[in-house]
Image 1 (cartoon, helix red, strand yellow):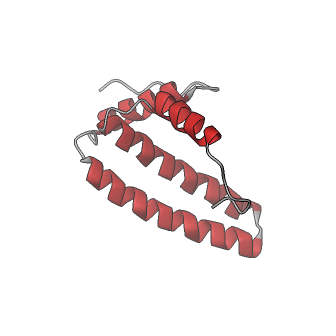
Image 2: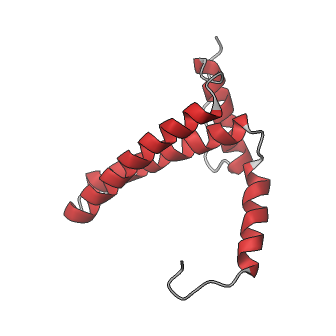
Length: 110
């Protein structure tokens, strides 16, 4: 098995999405269903909540780093789900946020 190339600094969203796809294929994880990835994302979201709670309570730099790590775990599963659904995240991100810009939002952001 060929080693996965390192992710280049400054990679754009399509490059990140492609890298996660290659990373999953290298490890034999690409056959996992989108539903399984959603369940795993849910677990990671719980870990993110716990990390944020610890960081907000104690404010330690190591806890802030843990928040970043949990966010990345969540992003990895979002990329994996997008890859299984054949969603181009760059296009979807831009289209959805263009629609969001045309919406009106209450002052509390909800």
